[in-house]
Length: 500
Image 1 (cartoon, rainbow, N blue to C red):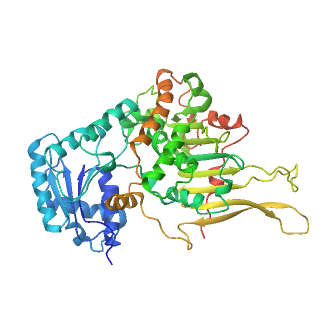
Image 2 (cartoon, one colour):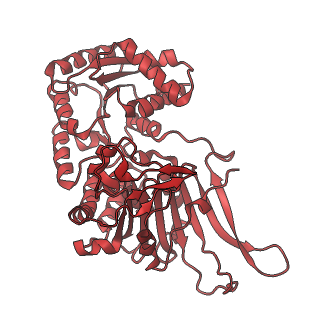
Image 3 (cartoon, helix red, strand yellow):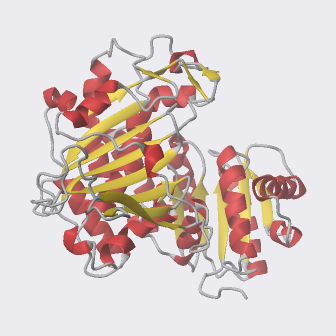
């Protein structure tokens, strides 16, 4: 049964022949179509430089879906909604031709003038495209107009402000949907539910009961073919400025008055405003950078970052970041939020560990075997679920304790396979729900925080690079960052959710 709650829309994808569209967008749209979450009243215009026909483009979409999902149910009906338009991005005639086909498809599929423009391209083209869309009349319709843009949104705060000003000449803030695919992940969205829908957690979600929070996002892969991009970005801009700070904001935000887009965003912005600022000379006390060198993983020899294609032989670019964030408000004063992210690490995993404080007097404390702390672990990827680490009585006559895990896995019989993040976000955009997209205020505050760190790192060379082996969990300095506070990184492998 088709979902009539999703409005009809014409989706125009700039960069339709690129990797993002092939790997993520077409399979996600197919999933939505197959599940009945979008009706037959939709059409997609793929915009690219290649000299393709509609048939060429449809075959490209068909292959993309098959390679990603291995499914072909109703595939012919699905791809019949796809059309191709060759476009020179700065040429007025190209946009006039696009306007004509848009109006024809609008009438044919009864789309009511609803249009979504998805810019799956490099940010340097955003300003040109949005200006042309407005000047050539493609946004002059009776329905809604929405602009979806990918990160990176700028390289620093000044470039982000310049880009935002360009886009705002053609689209209002409520029409702009800035994608952060982490916000589409099921368990990231579950952070709010875990906190605000459980009486056993929300009263404890503060500095009286929580000692520290750790957010880890590690990758097994190196930079692969992205060397040229990564040399300009690094882990700080690629991961911390968006994904990591977004997760921290969700973990630390106050309960919103209502579960509306504006109220949730407002609380996240308050967290970002409360991040403790630091001077340049304090960066080294709060943040650690790393770069992977050669190593081994699963008996396979791995090259170092500087050996990757399009990477400087003496590169000063970080592939690892660990940091200590302090949020100076009433709820979180004194509680460190530790973050770490890196490439070529021992495992691919994104996890959040909330460590609760020890009780004042432990009757079961044994100096030979300290009592394990209570932990709440939120598993983001590759598995999805939550684990609660508790202490219970050991079997036998003696009163001894042993740690146990209470698990819930989204891939087990208790849950269901969760949708790809892009599927969720595309559907939200069609419905006009911007909750899981980043607002300009969030982008601005994130860049302002990160810029202080990047300024210091760019003008000071780390002579110890590379400082961690491929296949490890990062440099020793990251361990020392926690050790000086009396903590340590929880071993990721030991926290895995157990499948039922």
